[in-house]
Image (tube, rainbow, N blue to C red; front, side, top):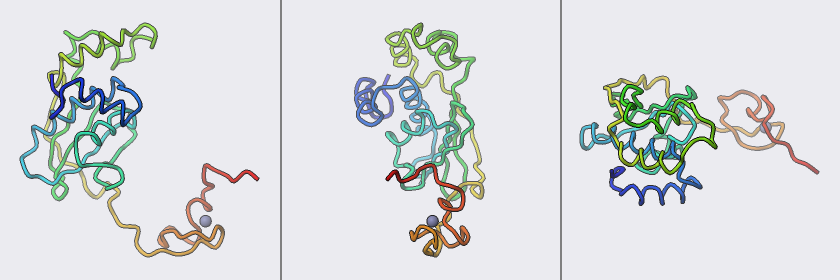
Length: 190
Ligand SMILES: [Zn+2]
């Protein structure tokens, strides 16, 4: 089956270029994103809310204009194979998830989603073939309303210079930049 405007092999090639390899989660995420897009009314300026950091955000970035850099892609760390596309202004949209009840004919996809097999046991070729054949048929869609006030969409506001590191940061964060105040996860080896 096609994934959005791409043939399966074409999407795989895009996935390799963007993500490093054609991860099954990216292929499945492609099916989910494509399914949600077809259910959105035409012409809606939409954003995306993805419920895992694994693979799915990259499927959204490959198939929609939503990216982390343009702040139209929001990610929450629920570890769930689910994503929503929603109207930027009203929050109304479509949530797509993989419905375990639809995976009966696709045992490799089921095993992969539920992590039932170790990496060595999983038949990657068969998994890909099943994703190609299943396409959007394993995706359950549901209308959703996203609470826009809970998304990080505000501008950073005025900037200040941090008295500790000398770098600029949003003044609203306090007297020090968060890197200095909270202890950034990096240091500068001499
Ligand atoms: Zn600082």
